[in-house]
Length: 480
Image 1 (cartoon, helix red, strand yellow):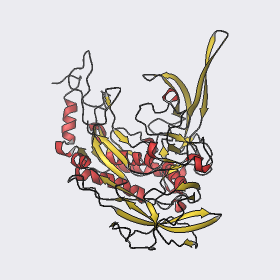
Image 2 (tube, one colour):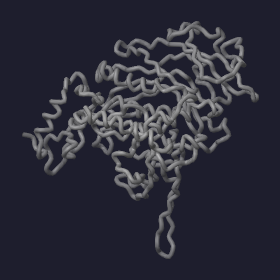
Image 3 (cartoon, one colour):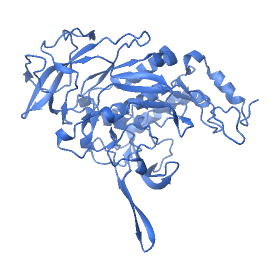
Image 4 (cartoon, one colour):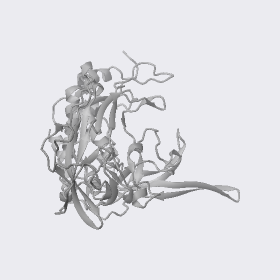
């Protein structure tokens, strides 16, 4: 227990002493030049690519709903649902962007549960946090400190040369300048070409002066090993969220298609069923303004205009009765929208009719990478995000834009699995991080306490003792 406490205190101490240097990366739809040949969408399962600052994508509503479908409930049960709730609680506990002090957040929030490490267990709460970084508009900052913009070859005097154009897609949240630093760690790069099996080129980052274990600390990077978990968001992650949601981060945006004017004013409080727009939840995105626009009908409002970030997003769980096959009962959410019109900031009351959850958690077979390794997770791609580059005068920037639902966050059901190979490993092999055997991990939930990890799927009733017992049977990769 003392060891765990020391591990928890160390990142907080480092955060207090370290200089305010870091960076975040933004996520958006693939641009035409962001192809596998130069390091993008390598697995074929990636949802987007890094964006420049003016091309950021974000939610432009202040309440986002999430739910669990039948497959997730059956596979993960109530403990798995609670783990996801805990991930959203960390996001909901963030203050409004205007009140965020980045120095309050540690540079590293990754800890290790040694029992879970020995048994090869992955924490679903932490992985949910990483997937939500993507679905809030953030990319893996350590991966995109350096990246390729172009590659060509030329032959001079019978010698063929390969040329690479390298750019930065990582930004300091204090200065908004391109940065080589993420959470206090400086990254350099080495171009590797070709990288098998896809034979692509990439600028591969490496940390300077620290071990790889202490680097790659952002939640958005998702570089978790079995037994690792996040106790919160790192300073880098919060810096990216602060940038996206800042009320001073202006972009021309349209409201979502299910938004109308709220002619009834503030409305009632609470999440309620929608019966034609008679009830609403009132939220605000914290602009200071006294110019409140009066609406005479549901379509009399400014749909497209210059808007700042929403300052804060609240994630609300709703009940999606897919077990019974019942239709989702629509909910209406009222909020105050702030928009610049003819150089004047006005505030208008809008309402959004939510006819399906914005985010749905699913458990399913996600297929295999290279026809052998299971894809562990999948998230809805960025192709459905609204690209507003044309109305912002940035027709070649690929953004800015708006994130919209429905988003599916999926976990594979292929765990645990066994991996075999010829000529001499045709028996059972289970993941053993100590022996570095072939990967075959399991989903679970755990933290820094002495409580035993919860292992999924719940219906298998697996325990840590079961997993450790499997490991002890294979000292030479041969079943006994």
